[in-house]
Image (cartoon, rainbow, N blue to C red; front, side, top):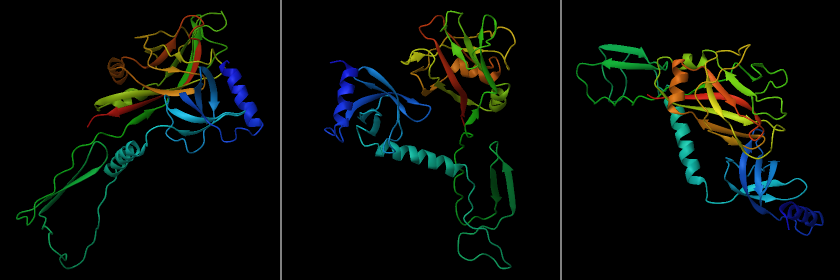
Length: 310
């Protein structure tokens, strides 16, 4: 029996009430831009399967329980308890928030001296603003009665998110009249398309004076363009600050950093050489290009997240 026939049989049984509550085990291929998932059901790709709230932190590769039917639904994740991973992730988030907030437990004054022990008489008070806009205070004292706490270790600036100012497709050496979404390959026989995302000077502005540690970029694959199964993005750099009225020239590449099924979203880490080129302004944006029908696909998104070192 084929996969689709088996799915039909499952649906029929559910319709007769014979298999109420039945679930099947499937693997998540991709998470889509709508929060649904594309799943592998015994070799068949089911697109945009909705999920219950019980299935959280969705990721490609997860094994999940799916309730088949005329509208399949993913019920929950199968596998180890995610408690430890969640605890670590939440701790990192809380630590980052705490270090980005300035806290003074109490600030009081009066005509008499302070009550209690441990107070220091200050001869001079110094302050400065860090590169992250935080204030540091230093008190100069003659005869301290207690040791000073250690200054906190330096922390990297918060990550910067850079959203494309524009995007588009090119074919035949000029902007494409029929495809405004960045597209790669040839789906009609009219010629290969190339697409691109443009950022102006936003990337170099965000990186000025900073030590860049990592750049990631997020994309989603458009539905109803090419086959539904996973297809790789053939990524390139380009040196255009804005969309050219002529041919879109490609720079370094291709790199196949991400492969997505229809409607799926994903994030890729850019190679170090690409990161450095974008940070310095030697490159200005990202492009895609493929030849022929095999990897014909269109993509949206293009938001770049830049992480810095301390």
